[in-house]
Length: 275
Image (cartoon, rainbow, N blue to C red; front, side, top):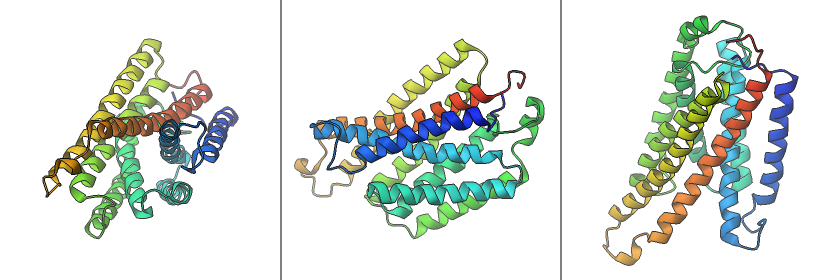
């Protein structure tokens, strides 16, 4: 099924964006929560952060509606820069360059996986057989190579916001895991079989739960190894591990939620005869 950037898609995407803006307005400031419980408000705040990051990646998927590859990848670069800047100004959590590296790596891997697993461009009129052969082009190779060259060059001069031994393994896990999950989500939402969609979405849910556990364990396990004093009081507690798991799960859930909304818009606006 070919997603079409028509009135129905724009209406659904606009509704999702409006809901996201309202959620950001309510939860962007950590001093203001939707409940009196600060921990509960913090959990919802991480969910909103995930939807914002997911919206940036969704916008990069929609940017594939541009036919010329130069315009397509220039549009994605502009969307990443604008989206990361707005995210940084809204939440004030991580350094701007850190968020840029995170997002650019995710979108680059996402582009690769969407091409390899035949997730269609928006407004791609070709038949499925033609799209499978031609979607991953020389222009795509050049764009991906340039993106990863930028990421590797940045890594040489970048000081992570936490210890490097904690930062890089978690970042590589995010780069690899999140694009895999959104690829499965898009395949599920565009699949003609209801059973196929349900199975794929269940797999994505299990991967999100497992991914949150793995990312939390990685970060805290490397934090323990990086404790030179050996003082047990400096090591993360079990409650810290639970909190990290919940935060990662909320970010992943928000990210996937943004793609589910985009997938619903794509499916609802796709012509029934387009396969």
